[in-house]
Length: 177
Image 1 (cartoon, rainbow, N blue to C red):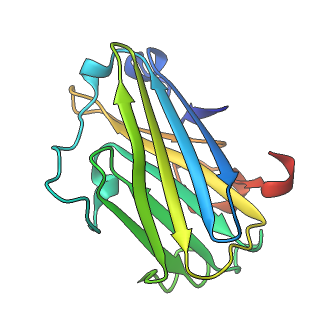
Image 2: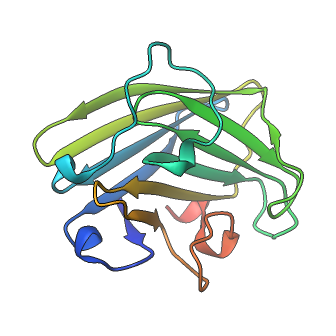
């Protein structure tokens, strides 16, 4: 598993560790694993959903995310995946950096596994694409909201002065993972 880095080092982020890994299961299926270590009682968890459904605005609280692109240039299209720890999800396509956002109707997301222990949470997210995946670069990210109101932004790398998960300079090429 790859450790994600918190954008801001605070007392809360210092007590947590977030890890993630991307696996391509088939030409149409990806699996992403997230692990979180620390005092989980200090995390704001979204309320359980009756039905795991597509929902906007998941990133406003604790949310697990992935960014996937067939290219590494700012002008290349990409997909943003959001998955709440309660199973609600969304997938958006962008034509280029933060431009042309639309719902990705050909992608579905399912929280396959979730379990928590005293100081560890584990999530497996399955992402299905009706087309074949052609991924050259990716970003694995998480928003973690704490009970004191603080939000932390975790990523493989934070290349700029603000937390920006869409910035491909913070992503990895798929071949080197």
